Length: 166
Image 1 (cartoon, rainbow, N blue to C red):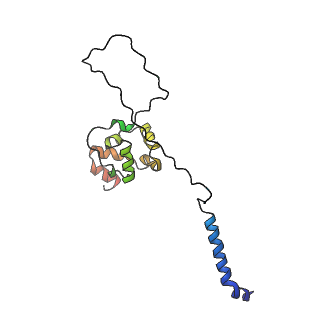
Image 2 (image 1 turned 30 degrees about the vertical axis):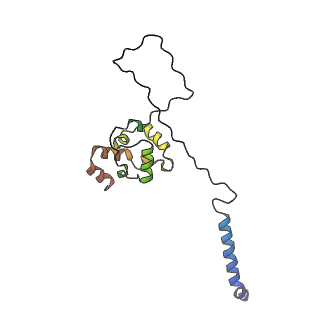
Image 3 (image 1 turned 90 degrees about the horizontal axis):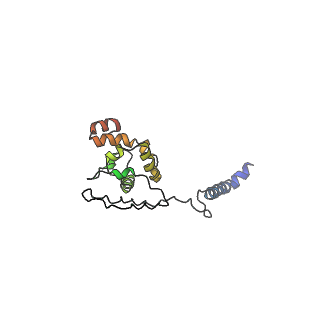
């Protein structure tokens, strides 16, 4: 038996390595014959324009009031980003857990100010979280609301004491 391994041991080792390599290649996640898992993409929702408000100085025209047409789709809930105060956008990168990609995504969703994030309710978090894609769960996990409250109030010392240096 010892002579067998002395004569053919190297060839057996090479054969074993080839078999392991073939098994590794055949058991890969995406096989050539299988389609890749589809990536879910959502089209951005266009903001709905508010109807024009009549000037209070002008008297309303008397007469019958026409009924508003009933749309086939229910009105979309107001986005938490809709209440963005005017002015320059805050640097959302100061929030722990927000990097360049997530910052760009938040800006696309209309989130530009710390005060907006600080004022989010549970429903707002759910609405934003549903649109974050791969970053789902980050607002709660990274405590964005609490961080934003410190930054919106200008309490950098309190922020750094709790979340570390900016």
